[in-house]
Image (cartoon, rainbow over all chains, first blue to last red; front, side, top):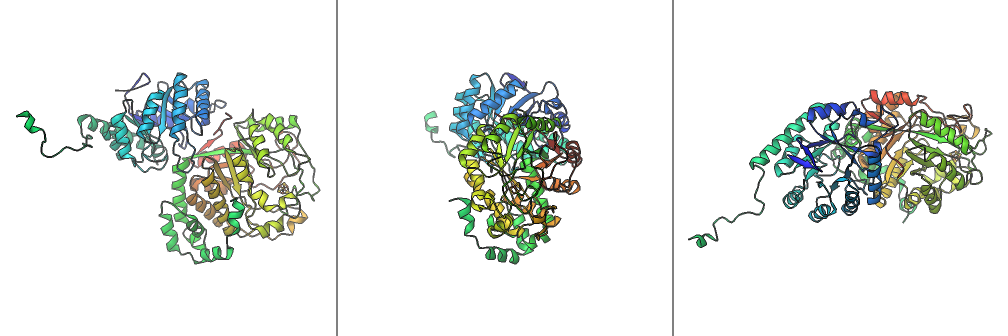
Length: 253
Length: 370
Ligand code: SF4
């Protein structure tokens, strides 16, 4: 079973909140996906009006994953994380430090800094990152609970364009790898899982579907299927290659 | 090189020729492209674009959903002074106009702020006319002092400032700056701004960049539609946004397309405004969205409630609600002089209901003071 920050999770599909037509869809999508972790932008959390407060739409038992959307530096991310904790959103935090509004690509250097600061303060840190092995290692050193490399830019629905880089991270990093952003269809989610991702986060593709509840269900089935296939070995394509005729066979004789 | 230097070299005749010669076939090809460059953007503004508007609108909807989802942010403007030394022919606060001049003190500003906050709105714009004697930077700083603790985001719509003045106000808690060039046509600009410091076209044009250098998180640009050729104005507005996003990629850039409203003053009555149809308006929105999918588009209450509702699925990101355009209009003084006539008199609740009816989510809070 997937375990993050000491929490055991049955579902390997994480969902979001930001792009729905109405907050009322949130509990329904959580139900249809079986998702147990949901991310929300702290900038949107509004405690002053219960009707608007999206926290009121998230059922008990669901793990909240507030994110630092809007932060441009590690320090801003840290301040947003502390605000989230003060608002009662718990101690998980998804770090998003983005200084490029065009492609919404994360700044790995600031993300590593933010991870170090917040892990020290006792947060369970899930950093959103550009898939770079050295950065992923630095995040592990900084105390990250997972790494969340992007498949393609946020909201682009373009699929896993960073496949090779993510494969390397999955291979080399021993904390959970969650593919975040860019997954546009259930088949792409299944693909990420077959590759060996520990989980995927899907927001835009579910939230902006004509029928988010049904689309959520489709994603959940795909994630399960992909995981099963990975477990029986379907996803293990030999990346390093194997020579066709043995070169060391003579040693056995 | 400042943006002023960048656009001075554009040849309007050449641009209009390109617009005229665009074919519907080219528009269809552009709509199917992943990325649209400056030239493509200009073509989208052509009469051929107008003929293929449905295709542009469909693509615009898709881009908007991917980037922003089904969420629309609500905000309200708060006018804190109408003293103005300028003579803009399209504005009631014009210096020559004999209107009740008013400037809110700190206590009155607080009352206005609280009245707006009551409605649930948490993002505001504060507005003044241009008068460095009546509303100096220190006065705006005082207003921020009162309003920043009440709201999630306070944006300035005041006269153009110098970089260090912007820095000072951002330090005082301003989240961003709104400043419309009104028109990018320098000749028309000179004609419609009869007197006052606003005559300085270049100083205004480069104000957005100064604010970003000073650390503004958001910047909103706009043109007042009806003053000059809308295609050229829109094209240059798009270039301006592109120029800023290339240099300040972390800035949130907003775009507004206010259509001019007839108002009753003698100076305004003299002008022949160019008409901008609803169809033109939709075309501009779509062209901007396809060229700059990451920019936010804002629709004000100058547009009727009915029209705003129809624009939602095409992709708008911000709307004003429960608006008063007079100084002290929310709490203090309910029958003063409006800056311009608004078409949509709906309350914040009405606007929220309208957004929900369209299948979108009204957002009241999308930032916080850090
Ligand atoms: S548009 Fe602004 S600067 Fe011009 S007259 Fe009105 S308030 Fe003054």
